[in-house]
Length: 78
Picture 1: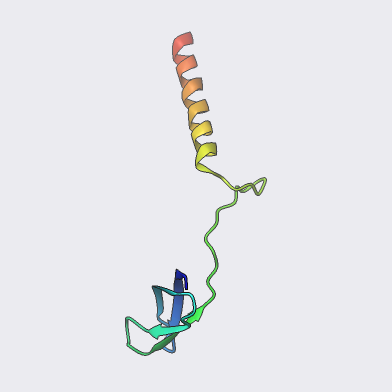
Picture 2: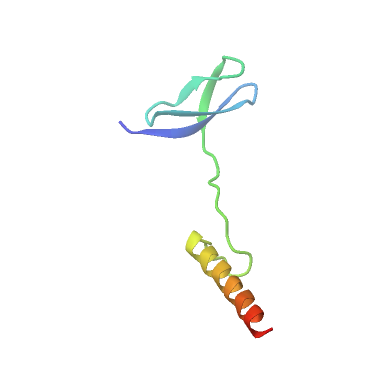
C-alpha cells in the first residue's frame, strides 16, 4: 500500500487533509469528529498568461539574470 495526502470533507463541510494509505476512503474530521469522506480536489498549477507554458524555476532564473545583465550594462555605459 502507498501513502498519500488526500482531502476529506465531513457532513458539516469541514475540509481536512490527511496523509494515509491510498486504500482508505474516510477519516474522522479533525474539527467536529464526524466521518469525513475523501474528495477529489483540484491540483494547484500556474500557467503563464499569454502562451500557456508552465513556468519553472529555471525560467524565472533566466529572466532575473537577463534583467541583472541589462542593469549592469546600463551602469557600465553611463
